[in-house]
Length: 597
Image 1 (cartoon, helix red, strand yellow):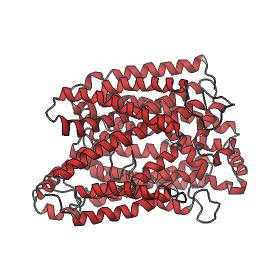
Image 2: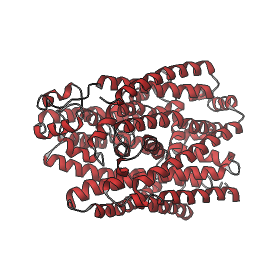
Image 3: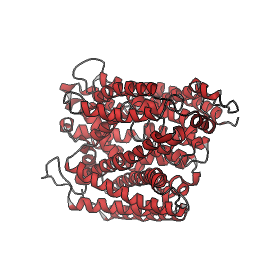
Image 4: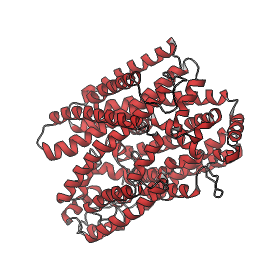
Protein backbone atom coordinates (compact mmCIF):
# COMPACT_ATOMS: atom_id res chain seq x y z
CA UNK A 1 0.00 0.00 0.00
CA UNK A 2 1.60 3.22 -1.17
CA UNK A 3 1.36 6.41 0.90
CA UNK A 4 1.21 9.80 -0.81
CA UNK A 5 2.37 13.18 0.48
CA UNK A 6 -1.16 13.86 1.81
CA UNK A 7 -1.05 10.62 3.81
CA UNK A 8 2.36 11.48 5.26
CA UNK A 9 1.18 14.97 6.18
CA UNK A 10 -1.71 13.48 8.18
CA UNK A 11 0.65 11.07 9.97
CA UNK A 12 3.23 13.73 10.86
CA UNK A 13 0.55 16.14 12.10
CA UNK A 14 -0.83 13.42 14.37
CA UNK A 15 2.52 12.72 16.01
CA UNK A 16 3.28 16.40 16.56
CA UNK A 17 -0.14 17.01 18.13
CA UNK A 18 0.11 13.91 20.34
CA UNK A 19 3.53 14.82 21.71
CA UNK A 20 2.50 18.42 22.40
CA UNK A 21 -0.66 17.36 24.24
CA UNK A 22 1.08 14.63 26.21
CA UNK A 23 4.03 16.77 27.28
CA UNK A 24 1.76 19.67 28.23
CA UNK A 25 0.76 17.73 31.36
CA UNK A 26 4.29 16.87 32.46
CA UNK A 27 4.09 19.29 35.37
CA UNK A 28 1.21 17.39 36.99
CA UNK A 29 3.03 14.05 37.23
CA UNK A 30 5.97 14.72 39.53
CA UNK A 31 4.28 15.61 42.82
CA UNK A 32 3.08 12.28 44.24
CA UNK A 33 1.87 8.77 43.42
CA UNK A 34 -1.71 10.00 43.52
CA UNK A 35 -0.93 12.68 40.93
CA UNK A 36 1.05 10.31 38.73
CA UNK A 37 -1.25 7.29 38.70
CA UNK A 38 -4.76 8.66 39.41
CA UNK A 39 -4.42 12.32 38.32
CA UNK A 40 -4.96 13.62 41.85
CA UNK A 41 -8.47 12.08 41.73
CA UNK A 42 -9.68 14.97 39.58
CA UNK A 43 -10.78 13.49 36.22
CA UNK A 44 -14.31 14.33 35.03
CA UNK A 45 -16.43 11.35 33.99
CA UNK A 46 -16.31 11.96 30.25
CA UNK A 47 -12.49 12.00 30.15
CA UNK A 48 -12.16 8.96 32.42
CA UNK A 49 -14.80 7.00 30.48
CA UNK A 50 -13.41 7.87 27.06
CA UNK A 51 -9.95 6.93 28.26
CA UNK A 52 -11.29 3.47 29.18
CA UNK A 53 -12.79 3.09 25.70
CA UNK A 54 -9.60 4.24 23.98
CA UNK A 55 -7.50 1.81 26.01
CA UNK A 56 -9.62 -1.16 24.93
CA UNK A 57 -9.42 0.04 21.31
CA UNK A 58 -5.98 -1.26 20.44
CA UNK A 59 -4.36 -2.36 17.21
CA UNK A 60 -5.45 -5.88 18.11
CA UNK A 61 -9.21 -5.32 18.50
CA UNK A 62 -10.27 -4.84 14.84
CA UNK A 63 -8.09 -7.81 13.88
CA UNK A 64 -9.47 -9.98 16.68
CA UNK A 65 -13.07 -9.10 15.78
CA UNK A 66 -12.31 -9.97 12.15
CA UNK A 67 -10.86 -13.30 13.26
CA UNK A 68 -13.91 -14.10 15.40
CA UNK A 69 -16.32 -13.31 12.55
CA UNK A 70 -14.25 -15.19 9.96
CA UNK A 71 -14.36 -18.34 12.11
CA UNK A 72 -17.74 -18.08 13.86
CA UNK A 73 -19.78 -15.49 11.98
CA UNK A 74 -21.32 -12.38 13.54
CA UNK A 75 -22.32 -14.40 16.62
CA UNK A 76 -18.63 -15.03 17.35
CA UNK A 77 -18.57 -11.55 18.87
CA UNK A 78 -20.49 -12.91 21.83
CA UNK A 79 -17.08 -13.91 23.18
CA UNK A 80 -16.63 -10.27 24.19
CA UNK A 81 -20.21 -8.97 23.99
CA UNK A 82 -21.10 -11.26 26.90
CA UNK A 83 -18.81 -9.25 29.17
CA UNK A 84 -21.27 -6.34 28.99
CA UNK A 85 -23.32 -8.11 31.66
CA UNK A 86 -20.45 -7.99 34.12
CA UNK A 87 -19.55 -4.51 32.95
CA UNK A 88 -22.97 -3.18 33.92
CA UNK A 89 -22.61 -4.72 37.37
CA UNK A 90 -19.34 -2.80 37.65
CA UNK A 91 -21.20 0.39 36.70
CA UNK A 92 -24.12 0.16 39.10
CA UNK A 93 -22.87 -2.05 41.91
CA UNK A 94 -19.10 -1.77 42.19
CA UNK A 95 -17.99 1.64 40.85
CA UNK A 96 -19.09 3.57 43.94
CA UNK A 97 -17.49 0.96 46.21
CA UNK A 98 -14.17 1.22 44.39
CA UNK A 99 -14.23 5.02 44.62
CA UNK A 100 -14.94 4.87 48.36
CA UNK A 101 -12.03 2.48 48.86
CA UNK A 102 -9.69 5.28 47.65
CA UNK A 103 -7.05 2.89 46.40
CA UNK A 104 -4.50 3.70 43.71
CA UNK A 105 -4.41 0.14 42.33
CA UNK A 106 -6.94 -2.66 42.48
CA UNK A 107 -4.29 -4.91 44.06
CA UNK A 108 -3.90 -2.44 46.94
CA UNK A 109 -7.51 -3.32 47.81
CA UNK A 110 -6.33 -6.73 49.07
CA UNK A 111 -4.80 -5.35 52.26
CA UNK A 112 -7.79 -3.10 52.79
CA UNK A 113 -10.12 -6.12 52.72
CA UNK A 114 -7.87 -8.75 54.31
CA UNK A 115 -5.13 -8.80 56.94
CA UNK A 116 -1.97 -10.60 58.01
CA UNK A 117 0.74 -12.41 56.08
CA UNK A 118 -1.63 -14.15 53.63
CA UNK A 119 -2.96 -10.76 52.49
CA UNK A 120 0.54 -9.31 52.15
CA UNK A 121 1.71 -12.34 50.18
CA UNK A 122 -1.37 -12.24 47.94
CA UNK A 123 -0.87 -8.55 47.24
CA UNK A 124 2.75 -9.06 46.23
CA UNK A 125 2.01 -12.14 44.12
CA UNK A 126 -0.90 -10.54 42.27
CA UNK A 127 1.03 -7.34 41.65
CA UNK A 128 3.92 -9.32 40.20
CA UNK A 129 1.59 -11.55 38.17
CA UNK A 130 -0.31 -8.67 36.58
CA UNK A 131 2.68 -6.35 36.13
CA UNK A 132 5.25 -8.87 34.93
CA UNK A 133 3.14 -11.56 33.20
CA UNK A 134 -0.33 -10.35 32.18
CA UNK A 135 0.73 -6.81 31.28
CA UNK A 136 3.60 -7.86 28.97
CA UNK A 137 1.30 -10.44 27.33
CA UNK A 138 -1.18 -7.66 26.50
CA UNK A 139 1.60 -5.44 25.15
CA UNK A 140 2.87 -8.44 23.20
CA UNK A 141 -0.41 -9.24 21.48
CA UNK A 142 -1.19 -5.64 20.52
CA UNK A 143 2.34 -5.37 19.11
CA UNK A 144 1.79 -8.61 17.18
CA UNK A 145 -1.41 -7.09 15.78
CA UNK A 146 0.48 -3.95 14.77
CA UNK A 147 3.08 -6.05 12.97
CA UNK A 148 0.30 -7.87 11.08
CA UNK A 149 -1.25 -4.54 10.16
CA UNK A 150 2.03 -3.19 8.78
CA UNK A 151 2.80 -6.40 6.88
CA UNK A 152 -0.48 -6.40 5.03
CA UNK A 153 -0.61 -2.66 4.31
CA UNK A 154 2.47 -0.45 3.84
CA UNK A 155 4.96 -3.34 3.73
CA UNK A 156 2.85 -5.78 1.74
CA UNK A 157 4.63 -8.04 -0.71
CA UNK A 158 2.42 -10.27 -2.85
CA UNK A 159 5.16 -12.92 -3.01
CA UNK A 160 5.23 -13.48 0.76
CA UNK A 161 3.49 -16.39 2.46
CA UNK A 162 0.37 -15.70 4.58
CA UNK A 163 2.15 -16.41 7.90
CA UNK A 164 5.11 -14.03 8.09
CA UNK A 165 7.61 -13.05 10.72
CA UNK A 166 8.58 -9.53 11.67
CA UNK A 167 11.23 -7.62 9.77
CA UNK A 168 13.65 -4.81 10.55
CA UNK A 169 11.41 -2.17 8.99
CA UNK A 170 8.45 -3.34 11.09
CA UNK A 171 10.41 -3.06 14.29
CA UNK A 172 11.83 0.35 13.42
CA UNK A 173 8.27 1.70 13.26
CA UNK A 174 7.18 -0.22 16.38
CA UNK A 175 10.17 1.01 18.37
CA UNK A 176 9.47 4.55 17.15
CA UNK A 177 5.91 4.26 18.47
CA UNK A 178 7.20 2.83 21.74
CA UNK A 179 9.62 5.73 22.07
CA UNK A 180 6.90 8.33 21.49
CA UNK A 181 4.56 6.67 24.01
CA UNK A 182 7.38 6.15 26.49
CA UNK A 183 8.27 9.84 26.46
CA UNK A 184 4.84 11.38 27.05
CA UNK A 185 3.54 8.57 29.26
CA UNK A 186 6.52 8.44 31.61
CA UNK A 187 6.74 12.21 32.10
CA UNK A 188 3.05 13.17 32.19
CA UNK A 189 1.40 10.37 34.18
CA UNK A 190 -2.35 9.73 34.14
CA UNK A 191 -3.36 13.23 33.02
CA UNK A 192 -1.23 12.96 29.88
CA UNK A 193 -2.43 9.40 29.21
CA UNK A 194 -6.12 10.29 29.66
CA UNK A 195 -6.11 13.45 27.52
CA UNK A 196 -4.20 11.84 24.65
CA UNK A 197 -6.57 8.87 24.92
CA UNK A 198 -9.54 11.15 24.21
CA UNK A 199 -7.91 12.63 21.10
CA UNK A 200 -6.74 9.21 19.91
CA UNK A 201 -10.21 7.68 20.35
CA UNK A 202 -11.91 10.38 18.26
CA UNK A 203 -9.36 9.97 15.46
CA UNK A 204 -9.56 6.18 15.56
CA UNK A 205 -13.36 6.10 15.40
CA UNK A 206 -13.50 8.59 12.54
CA UNK A 207 -10.98 6.53 10.57
CA UNK A 208 -12.80 3.23 11.13
CA UNK A 209 -16.21 4.65 10.19
CA UNK A 210 -14.83 6.14 6.97
CA UNK A 211 -13.11 2.85 6.14
CA UNK A 212 -16.32 0.87 6.72
CA UNK A 213 -18.28 3.12 4.38
CA UNK A 214 -15.63 2.90 1.64
CA UNK A 215 -15.29 -0.90 2.04
CA UNK A 216 -19.05 -1.60 1.85
CA UNK A 217 -19.40 0.66 -1.18
CA UNK A 218 -16.47 -1.17 -2.80
CA UNK A 219 -18.45 -4.45 -2.87
CA UNK A 220 -21.62 -2.73 -4.11
CA UNK A 221 -23.48 -1.85 -0.91
CA UNK A 222 -25.01 -3.74 2.00
CA UNK A 223 -27.34 -5.96 -0.07
CA UNK A 224 -24.56 -7.02 -2.42
CA UNK A 225 -22.31 -7.67 0.59
CA UNK A 226 -24.85 -10.12 2.03
CA UNK A 227 -25.26 -11.86 -1.31
CA UNK A 228 -21.53 -12.27 -1.89
CA UNK A 229 -20.77 -13.60 1.58
CA UNK A 230 -23.70 -16.04 1.44
CA UNK A 231 -22.59 -17.28 -1.98
CA UNK A 232 -19.00 -17.72 -0.81
CA UNK A 233 -20.15 -20.02 1.98
CA UNK A 234 -23.28 -21.58 0.46
CA UNK A 235 -22.21 -25.09 1.54
CA UNK A 236 -21.75 -23.93 5.14
CA UNK A 237 -25.01 -22.04 5.63
CA UNK A 238 -23.60 -18.73 4.46
CA UNK A 239 -26.62 -16.82 5.72
CA UNK A 240 -25.68 -17.79 9.29
CA UNK A 241 -22.65 -15.52 9.03
CA UNK A 242 -25.08 -12.63 9.67
CA UNK A 243 -26.93 -14.27 12.60
CA UNK A 244 -26.85 -12.19 15.78
CA UNK A 245 -27.71 -15.34 17.77
CA UNK A 246 -26.20 -18.65 16.56
CA UNK A 247 -28.38 -21.44 15.24
CA UNK A 248 -29.80 -23.76 17.89
CA UNK A 249 -29.50 -26.73 15.57
CA UNK A 250 -27.27 -28.12 12.85
CA UNK A 251 -23.69 -29.36 12.77
CA UNK A 252 -22.77 -26.71 10.21
CA UNK A 253 -23.47 -23.76 12.54
CA UNK A 254 -20.56 -21.34 12.53
CA UNK A 255 -20.72 -21.01 16.31
CA UNK A 256 -21.84 -24.06 18.33
CA UNK A 257 -24.78 -23.19 20.54
CA UNK A 258 -23.04 -24.81 23.52
CA UNK A 259 -20.20 -22.30 23.17
CA UNK A 260 -22.73 -19.46 23.04
CA UNK A 261 -24.33 -20.66 26.28
CA UNK A 262 -20.95 -20.74 28.01
CA UNK A 263 -20.22 -17.20 26.85
CA UNK A 264 -23.47 -15.60 28.01
CA UNK A 265 -24.14 -17.86 30.99
CA UNK A 266 -20.74 -18.45 32.58
CA UNK A 267 -17.87 -16.50 31.09
CA UNK A 268 -18.86 -12.94 32.11
CA UNK A 269 -18.99 -13.69 35.85
CA UNK A 270 -16.61 -16.65 36.18
CA UNK A 271 -13.62 -15.58 34.11
CA UNK A 272 -11.13 -12.82 34.80
CA UNK A 273 -10.26 -10.87 31.65
CA UNK A 274 -8.36 -7.55 31.39
CA UNK A 275 -10.73 -4.63 30.90
CA UNK A 276 -13.77 -6.79 31.73
CA UNK A 277 -12.90 -8.05 35.21
CA UNK A 278 -15.93 -9.23 37.25
CA UNK A 279 -16.46 -6.52 39.84
CA UNK A 280 -13.97 -4.22 38.13
CA UNK A 281 -10.19 -4.31 38.12
CA UNK A 282 -6.99 -3.18 36.44
CA UNK A 283 -7.02 0.05 34.49
CA UNK A 284 -10.81 0.34 34.79
CA UNK A 285 -10.42 0.65 38.57
CA UNK A 286 -7.52 3.04 38.02
CA UNK A 287 -9.79 5.33 35.96
CA UNK A 288 -12.58 5.10 38.55
CA UNK A 289 -10.08 5.94 41.29
CA UNK A 290 -9.00 8.96 39.23
CA UNK A 291 -12.55 10.36 39.06
CA UNK A 292 -13.67 13.34 41.13
CA UNK A 293 -16.24 11.41 43.17
CA UNK A 294 -18.58 8.41 43.19
CA UNK A 295 -21.02 10.02 40.74
CA UNK A 296 -18.28 10.68 38.19
CA UNK A 297 -16.99 7.10 38.65
CA UNK A 298 -20.45 5.67 37.91
CA UNK A 299 -21.03 7.90 34.89
CA UNK A 300 -17.54 7.19 33.53
CA UNK A 301 -18.02 3.43 33.60
CA UNK A 302 -21.54 3.72 32.16
CA UNK A 303 -20.26 5.78 29.22
CA UNK A 304 -17.46 3.24 28.77
CA UNK A 305 -19.91 0.33 28.52
CA UNK A 306 -22.20 2.10 26.03
CA UNK A 307 -19.37 3.30 23.79
CA UNK A 308 -17.40 0.06 24.04
CA UNK A 309 -20.22 -2.29 23.08
CA UNK A 310 -22.67 -0.18 21.05
CA UNK A 311 -20.82 2.62 19.25
CA UNK A 312 -17.44 1.14 18.47
CA UNK A 313 -17.84 -2.39 17.03
CA UNK A 314 -20.04 -1.96 13.95
CA UNK A 315 -17.41 -0.31 11.72
CA UNK A 316 -15.06 -3.22 12.50
CA UNK A 317 -17.83 -5.75 11.87
CA UNK A 318 -18.68 -4.31 8.46
CA UNK A 319 -15.02 -4.33 7.38
CA UNK A 320 -14.72 -7.93 8.60
CA UNK A 321 -17.77 -8.95 6.52
CA UNK A 322 -16.28 -7.21 3.50
CA UNK A 323 -13.12 -9.24 4.11
CA UNK A 324 -15.19 -12.46 3.96
CA UNK A 325 -16.75 -11.27 0.70
CA UNK A 326 -13.37 -10.49 -0.86
CA UNK A 327 -11.24 -13.26 0.69
CA UNK A 328 -13.35 -16.36 1.49
CA UNK A 329 -10.16 -18.29 2.32
CA UNK A 330 -10.02 -16.42 5.65
CA UNK A 331 -12.58 -18.86 7.10
CA UNK A 332 -9.99 -21.64 7.10
CA UNK A 333 -6.99 -19.56 8.20
CA UNK A 334 -5.65 -19.61 11.75
CA UNK A 335 -4.68 -15.93 11.64
CA UNK A 336 -7.91 -14.75 9.98
CA UNK A 337 -7.63 -11.29 11.52
CA UNK A 338 -5.30 -10.25 8.70
CA UNK A 339 -8.45 -9.77 6.61
CA UNK A 340 -8.90 -6.33 8.18
CA UNK A 341 -5.58 -4.82 6.95
CA UNK A 342 -6.05 -6.62 3.63
CA UNK A 343 -9.26 -4.65 3.09
CA UNK A 344 -7.43 -1.43 3.95
CA UNK A 345 -4.68 -2.24 1.47
CA UNK A 346 -7.07 -3.04 -1.37
CA UNK A 347 -9.85 -0.45 -1.01
CA UNK A 348 -8.60 2.61 0.92
CA UNK A 349 -8.05 5.74 -1.24
CA UNK A 350 -5.44 8.47 -0.76
CA UNK A 351 -6.07 10.45 2.41
CA UNK A 352 -7.94 7.59 4.05
CA UNK A 353 -4.73 5.55 3.96
CA UNK A 354 -2.95 8.17 6.02
CA UNK A 355 -5.89 8.47 8.39
CA UNK A 356 -6.07 4.68 8.84
CA UNK A 357 -2.34 4.63 9.64
CA UNK A 358 -3.07 7.30 12.25
CA UNK A 359 -6.07 5.26 13.48
CA UNK A 360 -3.92 2.23 14.17
CA UNK A 361 -1.06 4.27 15.59
CA UNK A 362 -3.53 6.00 17.93
CA UNK A 363 -5.19 2.75 18.98
CA UNK A 364 -1.82 1.12 19.58
CA UNK A 365 -0.38 4.05 21.52
CA UNK A 366 -3.44 4.53 23.74
CA UNK A 367 -3.25 0.91 24.87
CA UNK A 368 0.52 0.88 25.38
CA UNK A 369 0.42 4.09 27.44
CA UNK A 370 -2.26 2.63 29.73
CA UNK A 371 -0.43 -0.68 30.14
CA UNK A 372 2.75 1.20 31.01
CA UNK A 373 1.01 3.39 33.58
CA UNK A 374 -1.03 0.57 35.11
CA UNK A 375 1.89 -1.88 35.21
CA UNK A 376 4.16 0.72 36.79
CA UNK A 377 1.52 1.48 39.43
CA UNK A 378 1.58 -2.17 40.48
CA UNK A 379 5.37 -2.32 40.60
CA UNK A 380 5.80 0.90 42.55
CA UNK A 381 2.74 0.99 44.81
CA UNK A 382 2.27 -2.71 45.55
CA UNK A 383 5.84 -4.04 45.44
CA UNK A 384 8.44 -1.29 45.77
CA UNK A 385 6.69 0.97 48.26
CA UNK A 386 4.88 -1.82 50.12
CA UNK A 387 7.79 -4.26 50.57
CA UNK A 388 11.09 -2.58 49.65
CA UNK A 389 10.99 1.12 50.55
CA UNK A 390 7.90 2.01 52.59
CA UNK A 391 9.44 5.28 53.85
CA UNK A 392 10.23 6.68 50.39
CA UNK A 393 9.20 10.27 49.74
CA UNK A 394 6.49 11.09 47.22
CA UNK A 395 9.00 12.66 44.82
CA UNK A 396 11.17 9.55 45.04
CA UNK A 397 8.16 7.36 44.29
CA UNK A 398 7.16 9.57 41.37
CA UNK A 399 10.66 9.09 39.91
CA UNK A 400 10.42 5.34 40.55
CA UNK A 401 7.11 5.36 38.68
CA UNK A 402 8.76 6.77 35.57
CA UNK A 403 11.46 4.10 35.75
CA UNK A 404 8.80 1.43 36.29
CA UNK A 405 6.93 2.59 33.18
CA UNK A 406 10.04 2.08 31.05
CA UNK A 407 10.64 -1.37 32.60
CA UNK A 408 7.09 -2.48 31.78
CA UNK A 409 7.56 -1.33 28.20
CA UNK A 410 10.83 -3.27 27.88
CA UNK A 411 9.20 -6.48 29.16
CA UNK A 412 6.34 -6.01 26.70
CA UNK A 413 8.80 -5.77 23.81
CA UNK A 414 10.41 -9.08 24.84
CA UNK A 415 7.03 -10.85 24.99
CA UNK A 416 6.09 -9.33 21.63
CA UNK A 417 9.18 -10.94 20.06
CA UNK A 418 8.11 -14.33 21.46
CA UNK A 419 4.49 -14.04 20.31
CA UNK A 420 5.51 -12.92 16.84
CA UNK A 421 8.05 -15.73 16.59
CA UNK A 422 5.29 -18.27 17.40
CA UNK A 423 2.75 -16.47 15.17
CA UNK A 424 0.07 -16.32 17.89
CA UNK A 425 -3.25 -15.01 16.52
CA UNK A 426 -4.85 -12.16 18.42
CA UNK A 427 -8.24 -13.81 19.00
CA UNK A 428 -6.47 -16.94 20.28
CA UNK A 429 -4.53 -14.81 22.77
CA UNK A 430 -7.84 -13.28 23.95
CA UNK A 431 -9.36 -16.71 24.57
CA UNK A 432 -6.17 -18.05 26.18
CA UNK A 433 -6.14 -15.31 28.81
CA UNK A 434 -9.87 -15.71 29.49
CA UNK A 435 -9.43 -19.45 30.03
CA UNK A 436 -6.36 -18.86 32.21
CA UNK A 437 -8.44 -16.73 34.60
CA UNK A 438 -11.55 -18.95 34.57
CA UNK A 439 -13.17 -19.58 37.93
CA UNK A 440 -11.59 -16.70 39.80
CA UNK A 441 -14.06 -14.05 38.70
CA UNK A 442 -16.81 -14.96 41.17
CA UNK A 443 -14.60 -14.48 44.23
CA UNK A 444 -13.73 -10.95 43.07
CA UNK A 445 -17.43 -10.10 43.09
CA UNK A 446 -18.40 -11.84 46.33
CA UNK A 447 -15.55 -10.36 48.38
CA UNK A 448 -17.49 -7.07 48.46
CA UNK A 449 -20.71 -8.65 49.77
CA UNK A 450 -19.79 -11.70 51.87
CA UNK A 451 -17.74 -11.16 54.99
CA UNK A 452 -16.61 -14.81 55.02
CA UNK A 453 -14.42 -14.43 51.92
CA UNK A 454 -10.78 -14.28 53.07
CA UNK A 455 -7.32 -13.96 51.56
CA UNK A 456 -7.10 -17.74 51.15
CA UNK A 457 -10.23 -17.61 48.96
CA UNK A 458 -8.44 -15.43 46.41
CA UNK A 459 -5.23 -17.42 46.67
CA UNK A 460 -7.17 -20.63 46.01
CA UNK A 461 -9.04 -19.03 43.10
CA UNK A 462 -5.85 -17.77 41.51
CA UNK A 463 -3.77 -20.94 41.82
CA UNK A 464 -6.77 -23.21 41.28
CA UNK A 465 -7.42 -21.72 37.85
CA UNK A 466 -3.73 -22.06 36.95
CA UNK A 467 -3.71 -25.70 38.09
CA UNK A 468 -6.87 -26.81 36.28
CA UNK A 469 -5.94 -24.79 33.21
CA UNK A 470 -2.57 -26.58 33.01
CA UNK A 471 -4.33 -29.96 33.20
CA UNK A 472 -6.78 -29.39 30.36
CA UNK A 473 -4.95 -26.91 28.14
CA UNK A 474 -3.14 -29.61 26.16
CA UNK A 475 -6.37 -31.46 25.34
CA UNK A 476 -6.67 -31.03 21.56
CA UNK A 477 -10.38 -31.92 21.48
CA UNK A 478 -11.33 -29.06 23.83
CA UNK A 479 -12.01 -25.64 22.34
CA UNK A 480 -10.94 -22.46 24.11
CA UNK A 481 -14.57 -21.64 24.99
CA UNK A 482 -15.21 -25.11 26.42
CA UNK A 483 -11.96 -24.80 28.35
CA UNK A 484 -13.34 -21.76 30.18
CA UNK A 485 -16.27 -23.83 31.51
CA UNK A 486 -14.15 -26.90 32.31
CA UNK A 487 -11.65 -24.83 34.31
CA UNK A 488 -14.23 -22.59 36.01
CA UNK A 489 -16.34 -25.29 37.68
CA UNK A 490 -13.60 -27.10 39.69
CA UNK A 491 -11.88 -23.79 40.44
CA UNK A 492 -15.04 -22.35 42.03
CA UNK A 493 -15.60 -25.51 44.06
CA UNK A 494 -11.96 -25.46 45.18
CA UNK A 495 -11.92 -21.89 46.48
CA UNK A 496 -15.33 -22.32 48.15
CA UNK A 497 -14.01 -25.33 50.10
CA UNK A 498 -10.84 -23.45 51.02
CA UNK A 499 -12.94 -20.51 52.23
CA UNK A 500 -15.01 -22.68 54.56
CA UNK A 501 -12.09 -24.64 56.06
CA UNK A 502 -9.88 -21.60 56.72
CA UNK A 503 -10.55 -19.04 59.48
CA UNK A 504 -12.29 -15.76 58.59
CA UNK A 505 -10.45 -12.45 58.57
CA UNK A 506 -9.95 -10.77 61.98
CA UNK A 507 -12.98 -8.79 63.11
CA UNK A 508 -10.85 -5.65 63.38
CA UNK A 509 -9.96 -5.79 59.66
CA UNK A 510 -13.54 -6.51 58.61
CA UNK A 511 -15.02 -3.70 60.70
CA UNK A 512 -12.47 -1.22 59.37
CA UNK A 513 -13.31 -2.21 55.79
CA UNK A 514 -17.04 -2.03 56.50
CA UNK A 515 -16.69 1.45 58.00
CA UNK A 516 -14.78 2.74 54.97
CA UNK A 517 -16.80 1.16 52.14
CA UNK A 518 -20.14 0.43 53.93
CA UNK A 519 -21.34 -2.24 51.46
CA UNK A 520 -24.98 -3.29 51.60
CA UNK A 521 -26.70 -6.66 51.47
CA UNK A 522 -27.24 -9.49 53.95
CA UNK A 523 -23.71 -10.86 53.59
CA UNK A 524 -22.32 -8.33 56.10
CA UNK A 525 -24.88 -8.74 58.90
CA UNK A 526 -22.45 -10.28 61.42
CA UNK A 527 -20.07 -7.35 60.92
CA UNK A 528 -22.83 -4.72 60.75
CA UNK A 529 -23.84 -5.68 64.27
CA UNK A 530 -20.34 -4.70 65.43
CA UNK A 531 -20.56 -1.29 63.74
CA UNK A 532 -24.13 -0.05 64.30
CA UNK A 533 -23.06 3.55 63.63
CA UNK A 534 -22.37 2.74 59.94
CA UNK A 535 -25.20 3.26 57.47
CA UNK A 536 -24.78 0.63 54.73
CA UNK A 537 -25.98 1.02 51.16
CA UNK A 538 -29.71 0.55 51.13
CA UNK A 539 -30.12 0.46 47.35
CA UNK A 540 -28.34 -2.77 46.40
CA UNK A 541 -31.53 -4.09 44.80
CA UNK A 542 -31.89 -0.92 42.74
CA UNK A 543 -28.24 -1.22 41.68
CA UNK A 544 -28.76 -4.79 40.49
CA UNK A 545 -31.86 -3.66 38.58
CA UNK A 546 -29.77 -0.91 37.00
CA UNK A 547 -27.21 -3.50 35.87
CA UNK A 548 -29.94 -5.65 34.30
CA UNK A 549 -31.67 -2.75 32.54
CA UNK A 550 -28.31 -1.29 31.49
CA UNK A 551 -27.48 -4.60 29.83
CA UNK A 552 -30.83 -4.28 28.03
CA UNK A 553 -29.71 -0.90 26.68
CA UNK A 554 -26.47 -2.37 25.35
CA UNK A 555 -27.92 -5.42 23.64
CA UNK A 556 -31.04 -3.76 22.23
CA UNK A 557 -29.02 -0.84 20.88
CA UNK A 558 -26.37 -3.17 19.49
CA UNK A 559 -29.10 -5.21 17.75
CA UNK A 560 -30.95 -2.14 16.51
CA UNK A 561 -27.88 -0.55 14.92
CA UNK A 562 -27.08 -3.82 13.16
CA UNK A 563 -30.63 -4.22 11.85
CA UNK A 564 -30.57 -0.63 10.62
CA UNK A 565 -27.30 -1.18 8.76
CA UNK A 566 -28.73 -4.28 7.08
CA UNK A 567 -31.87 -2.31 6.15
CA UNK A 568 -34.22 -4.36 8.33
CA UNK A 569 -35.97 -1.22 9.53
CA UNK A 570 -38.93 -2.91 11.24
CA UNK A 571 -36.77 -4.92 13.63
CA UNK A 572 -34.45 -1.92 13.99
CA UNK A 573 -37.39 0.17 15.18
CA UNK A 574 -38.39 -2.49 17.72
CA UNK A 575 -34.84 -2.69 19.04
CA UNK A 576 -34.58 1.08 19.25
CA UNK A 577 -37.88 1.30 21.14
CA UNK A 578 -36.60 -1.24 23.69
CA UNK A 579 -33.33 0.69 23.96
CA UNK A 580 -35.20 3.96 24.60
CA UNK A 581 -37.41 2.41 27.30
CA UNK A 582 -34.40 0.81 28.98
CA UNK A 583 -32.41 4.04 28.60
CA UNK A 584 -35.08 6.17 30.28
CA UNK A 585 -35.23 3.64 33.11
CA UNK A 586 -31.44 3.70 33.48
CA UNK A 587 -31.48 7.50 33.58
CA UNK A 588 -33.95 7.40 36.46
CA UNK A 589 -31.91 4.79 38.33
CA UNK A 590 -28.70 6.80 37.90
CA UNK A 591 -30.43 9.91 39.30
CA UNK A 592 -31.68 7.93 42.26
CA UNK A 593 -28.30 6.34 42.97
CA UNK A 594 -26.33 9.58 42.69
CA UNK A 595 -28.59 11.94 44.61
CA UNK A 596 -27.22 13.04 48.01
CA UNK A 597 -28.60 11.10 50.96
